[in-house]
Amino acid sequence: MPISTSIEVGRPATEVFDYVTDPSPFHEWQNGVTEGHLQSASPPTVGDRCLTTNGRIGFAQRPVTSEVTHVDPPHRWGVHGIDGPIRADVDVTVEPLDDDKRSKVTITMDFTGYGIGKLLVPLIVRPQARREMPVNVHRLKNDWKSSTHEPASNPPPETLPSSCADPKRAPSNPDGHRAPTAGSEALMSMPAWARGSPLSRVRL
Image 1 (cartoon, rainbow, N blue to C red):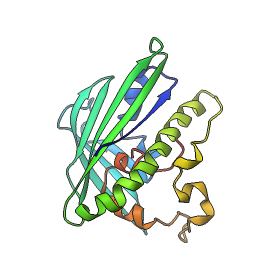
Image 2: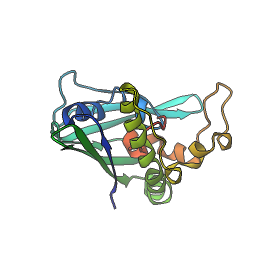
Image 3: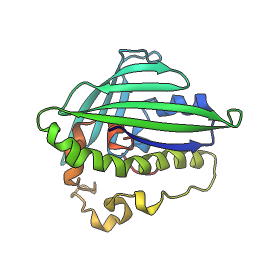
Image 4: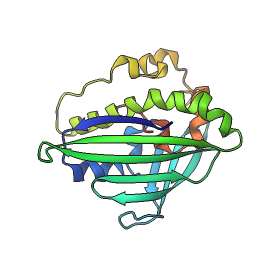
């Protein structure tokens, strides 16, 4: 069953759409993403590849490839994962509000497991995505607020994963990076959005 989350942002639809569908700043609001880019240098079209590098397991990073399935600026954008044992279908919808002074962003995703992924999707992937997606969208909103010097609000405590709600509970590696949980390791092969938030650092 698809998982969906929405948030309102105080920016015009075109500006919001361009930002949330550009893989380059994914690391700014999506938990576990370190970098991302489109294979094509021009505006994305159906069939273009979205390439991201997700998270960090020890000292290794995992590349993930998704294919753009639909583009309708500044309203809808979607991708479909094409590699790894856990593949996400992600749909982004941007709805203008108040004569385009604000926008409502809705991110919907579903998962398909292959091999070991068939076990991980219901046991780990979906529950973690439900927890992390609200955190990521709050981080996205707070990024916009920071750029306009508005006071940023923290996400509701109940939406925070345990490692975010209490940093002391998340051990760090010797290089200072927070050690991944068992759930995050399983999610490393997913597109960033699927990990929600969705789904990098949880500032949304």
